[in-house]
View (cartoon, rainbow, N blue to C red):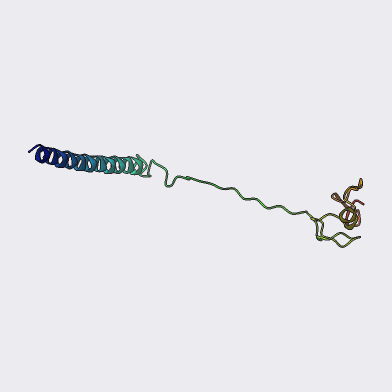
Length: 112
């Protein structure tokens, strides 16, 4: 008898939670619909008053390059984005092989 009443009361409480879940779901749908109607509501000019879309996430990407015609050193023929041959041979020396220079003639070269 005691087990029958707990089983009956247990099934009654789960039925109540189903209806409350449904009510919550219906409430969310209603709020969403009202929000959409408010957003799409037309003003006096006939245009929608809300934004057409909302940016949720934005990732910026950039690219750069040297403003020259060549991408190799005029002396060592190594790429300008890489260190010079002298610097690669002896990186501990006080070399400026990581810097480049533009000549008046238009040549681009490493500074060592």
